[in-house]
Image (cartoon, rainbow, N blue to C red; front, side, top):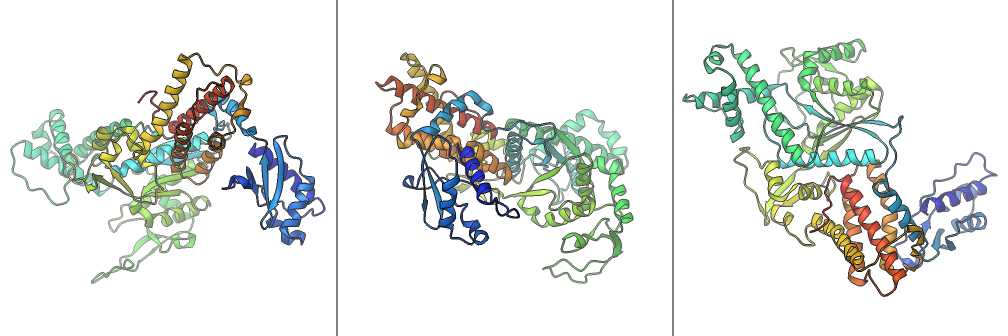
Amino acid sequence: MKQALEQALQAALAELLKDHPDAVAPEVQLTRPKMKEHGDYAASVAMPLARLLKKSPQQIAASILEVVQWPDAVVGADIAGPGFINIRLRQASEAEALKTIMLAGESYGKQVVLADAEKVNLEFVSANPTGPMHVGHGRGAVVGDALASVLKAVGKKVHREYYINDAGVQIGVLANSVWLRMQELKGETVVFPEAAYPGEYIVRIAREVLEKHDYQQLLAMEEDERSGLIGGEAIAANMAMIRDDLNAIGIHFDHYFSEQSLHASGRVSALIDKLAADGVVYNGTLPPPKGQEVEDYTPVEQQLFRTTDFGDDVDRPLAKQDGTPTYFAADIAYHYDKYLRGFDRMIDVWGADHGGYVSRVQAAMKALTGREAQPDVLLVQMVNLTRDGKPVKMSKRAGTFVTLREVVDEVGADAVRFNFMTRRVESQLDFDLEAAKQKNDENPVYYVQYAYARIGAILRKAEDEGHAIGELDDVDVSVLTEHEEQRLVAHLLAYPEALQKAADRLEAYRVATFAMRLAADFHSFYHKHRVVTDDVVLTRARMLLIKAVGQIIRNALTVLGVSTPERM
């Protein structure tokens, strides 16, 4: 209905502007008035034309109404305020869409993924393989996974990717931490440096390595060789743990990309050579870091990338003082690799502490590909984990933080996924473990899932009493005239638009918000009206209405990776 109305108004604008061949008609976008007496839809399209046509918006709106060809469902339209066009529909006319929803089922709101659809590389989580995932990683994981589902639902080809940071200083620290624990398990007295990784998982890895390799042979190895072997074993063990943690909340990747593979294949050094050949690399020195007092700062000549030519605030080094590539060099090699693999768009989900890193990567990609503001970066704020309002103590398993898996095991994957999606990513999230386990209206996932389960219970009871929806074409939906009924219908019709908006703005949380509001509308309807009544026609119509509500709740929760239990 909304599309039909917008098309009718767009055609009227074209007629109105036919004597202005150079004019571009504004795009018609209808909104729902907050007050029912203002009609079912409103359009502000007359206002942008005032200067062009040299008439008041009210006069232009009147001219539009003279030529517009409304669909049959429109019973009237009038002009309000400074030139708004308010449109009124025949009572319950939109309820016919309930039949469309049920025929479409799980595909309602979705678009078909065509062969030439935009190819999107969505990189998320990418936690260092040095230990288990913490709840902050978990929020980024859920955000990325839900966004991937949203983008796929609107017709994008989405590739979920995890970038394994398996090179650099932290891997050496990991290997040394495991080696120290191995020596301790063999009865040696060891001193653990402050930088060493704590946690029971390091001891577990140490035991596993000792079971697979002879300790005396490891002792006899050169330090670099031993560190490489133990580091490889530790990375494999931690990645297996991370995959298992991700699986526990239903997240699976199309590809795990190794940073080490970039170095081993020579792609990092090849990229630096390419940038040098393109004339965007020079040898120079950098000033001390901004906002920091550095005593006896000695500038060192380095190989610098002219990122300031492409929007960055300072040129960036590509190699360390010892000549090895910087993390930045590897990172731009990785993103350039995505470009070479044919992705039309790159989206990265990072922790909020990486905010200062965005401009330099985007500058590098502009230099390499000519694309602006790529990758798109979502910066996810941390999670404040509490129990009854008090901060949760750190985990023995991890040593320094509470692991994602501990939270999932306590409150369940659905509670974790849905609660992580209830706020914008740039907002910090307070997650209370006890509240997440409650079976009441204060627990958002329970509130939505209970609406779905209640609908199923109502329909089963109605069918047990001999009621049935029957053939969709035979259901008379014109009887759905109550305010709560029409509010539900309007909400259901808004689902495709909500899904599209979530994709366009990269805000998957909008789907969770939509589901909560739909559940609230359903609960409001349920408390005021009976589904099964003495009126057979009304009963069938209401059964169809709530079944459609259940279908859309199911569709929305499926996009979010949350289950829809039939009974609660």
